[in-house]
Image (cartoon, rainbow, N blue to C red):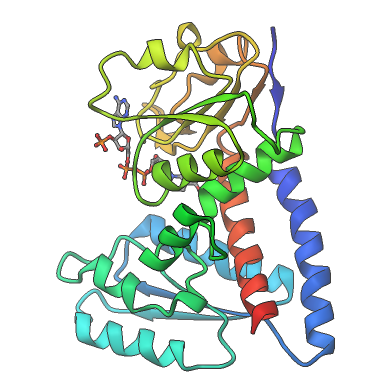
Length: 282
Ligand code: NAP
């Protein structure tokens, strides 16, 4: 079998066209969706991510503010900036790029963001809303994965078994909650799972969110399964790769997401969706 590709880039373009159209409608009413991106320090990868986020805002017709600070910024100074953005009516979404320098407590900063502007979906209030099925911002990466499933006709996952590899607060856990909300039967696996392959072989849907090359190989996949690769790694040649052995798994899976061009573009797109929805609510 050769799996069909779920093209995150193409799906993103479709979704962003809709975001832009909705943003134009808001603008006609005098509201321009606004996103503030805050970067502290000079982490190379973070600089690329924030540039892409600002560029996406421009493409969607949003107002965006990029605040860059020196790595020596104190926690108190950063908290004061977050508070100012919370009170700025032109800003509907606030994103503080992680990781922060070691002397700043990530959790404290995320909790300082108003839940009404938490477009990354990392605030405890957003995680709690997802847990109990209330309205709140959904974490962008798993939200994008759900849209990818929807794009292949998998919206109601009743009767499907989903296995999530990884249990981080930003990907694995919210992913599992979203799959559960869509009626899948969900197994969460992690570094303490005894026999990962025994779990993944039962899965109709596998989401790999680990950050290690070749965590999922062809022998671990049921024929026809849907495989979503969240991982971002570099191989020995420095090429961007996911967690999935793409060449092997594509011969067994029914659908597969590529890296690059899969979950990555969807994550930024869902950030745009969350920012737009925040502006619509405002
Ligand atoms: P993380 O916080 O490091 O979590 C990794 C998870 O993988 C942990 O729960 C860990 O288990 C589990 N794990 C580690 N080794 C394992 C193994 N051998 N078998 C099963 N589980 C294992 O990472 P993250 O933030 O969730 O990110 C995961 C990956 O996704 C990274 O490559 C990251 O760069 C990528 N990512 C991509 C996007 C995107 O937009 N494409 C967005 C976010 C993240 P324990 O909990 O037991 O340690």
